[in-house]
Image (cartoon, protein in one colour):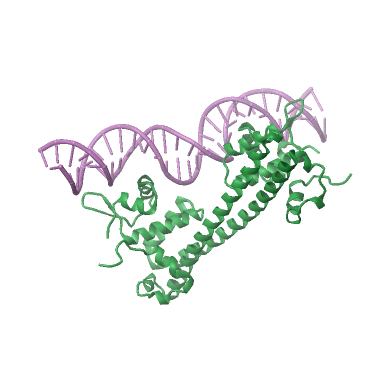
Length: 153
Length: 153
DNA sequence: GCTTGACTTTAAGTTTGCTTTAAGTTGTAG
DNA sequence: CTACAACTTAAAGCAAACTTAAAGTCAAGC
């Protein structure tokens, strides 16, 4: 039912030093201690730590996660704050994903760019290339990257 | 045709100090200087900086981006390295997206958790909850979070 | 020709999130 | 009862990516 810091660290695949750091920063106000001062983690604590992991992966700072843990400790009166926090973080992650998908498109374009250059033996092949030589899916990205300040004149 | 650091900074929405830092770190070996030492950015430089931005968003470190810029400076002989780098980064971003989607599911579960708690007025509503009370899509996440070391005994 | 704002450099400072070190305590195995 | 691994704390150290400060140069307008 209880784990030492080493055991829970292994279960979560996080160094014990990191867990001690989290504790010091106030992220783990729920962790109990044995009479001699050793941290005793329960299964409920495992769940809390999994949520902390999730919030970290969502990009939240230690400070913000701490605020959330304080809300948890404060009880049912803070349910609205916690709900809206999860809602915000969900939106946050959605926009991160959207951002990464844009990034992905540019990377795919550059992959195509270098595949083509590899075949031709030189990057110069792209200088003599017409828009129609670029696969449709990459044309808008190509234009975004090569936008000039004065297209005309 | 040429921009000062302030102009290109505005175009890219990056502080000039950051661009100087990039230059110092060797990310911008292509930038030319006026006779008096002022950086002159061209449209081609804008494209290079856009790619640097992309690689940063993909999670690459300054050091790794520098290595890429060195390949670019070295010419066509490094096309294979650059191609495989973009390929690796694409895979990298794909797995980041997959990770964020997992994160998203947990956030959505917690959002549901607190919506339910808000309606009930207390988080305690979840203690008396049966698996069948949990929406199907959230059951596996619920179980992952509440996994105990010894389900039986 | 002088002011002013934008540029230059070097160096130091900041923030975040750990990680490491040092010195000490605990608890289990032989 | 002693060894030894695993726990404890406080404090220092570290890496990454900027940001700020200080001191100076440049160029355009009045």
